[in-house]
Image (cartoon, rainbow, N blue to C red; front, side, top):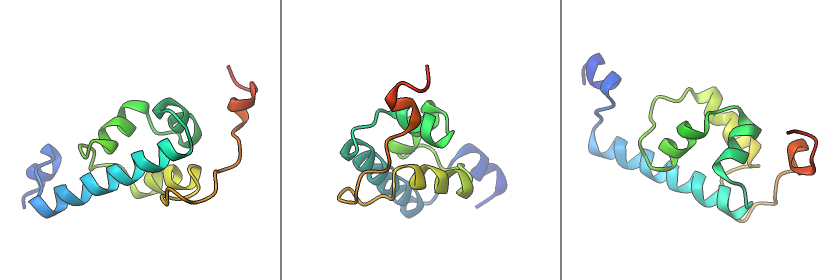
Length: 95
């Protein structure tokens, strides 16, 4: 694969399928903790549009450190894991 193919987001089918699976896991967990994409965006610092693309398997260029923040904000990717602590903004502290 060439560098320009990576920039354009063209990946091997198994890599693309992997991103789709990751996106499904993120979405399933986000829904299980009853957060909107905007809530998750505020909690982890990743743009809401990037979260949307990630959940749809279309975002592959996110840095691992940002992805790790997203996972940590939700308390992991397991849909049955305990809910993360209530964010400050959820109790009226923000906005």
